Image 1: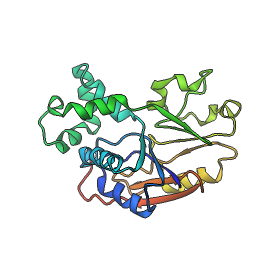
Image 2 (image 1 turned 120 degrees about the horizontal axis):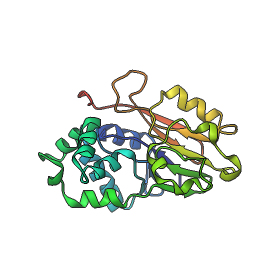
Image 3 (image 1 turned 60 degrees about the vertical axis):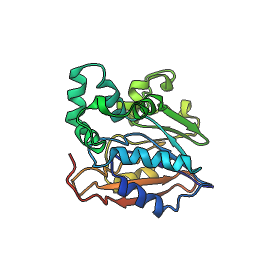
Length: 229
């Protein structure tokens, strides 16, 4: 059995499938997805449907919530939140459902998004979308930071972590930065595995899988050809 983490798929279903093939993901493995399944890429609905398909076939897939899922949920609250979501890739999500507006999306998808966990603790690791606010006595109590925080490595509390490593996404970084973080886990026990798959900049365009047991990285170049919003 192997354990893998992947983050920030952003509607790139073809790339996601290619990465799972590359790591030879099987029913004996565990896959942890760290949020941002939707927005910007062309097939947000397809990504969620494929996750459900894997789970229905007996694959062990565990899903966390990202800030884009939260933005979509917040869009039901008021028009300002909805505009903000649409500006940050929400239109591509609506298009992937082949509907005209948010309220036409099937409620089963909305319910699934609402029920997603903010973090997961497993042996040797804390998994989260964006990171942890180490200004809190218990960083696992700050759910907002788990979805949105950036630039927090300087405040990492190693005593609180107790030899665990934080694996997260949210902030896109080039492959070289991810690889460098892996080399420096002893001094900075956190690694950002968001390779910016959905972005057009050449320094990104990678979906990353992190083997949590062998501490090995796998990178898949984006397969989607259409422009990203």
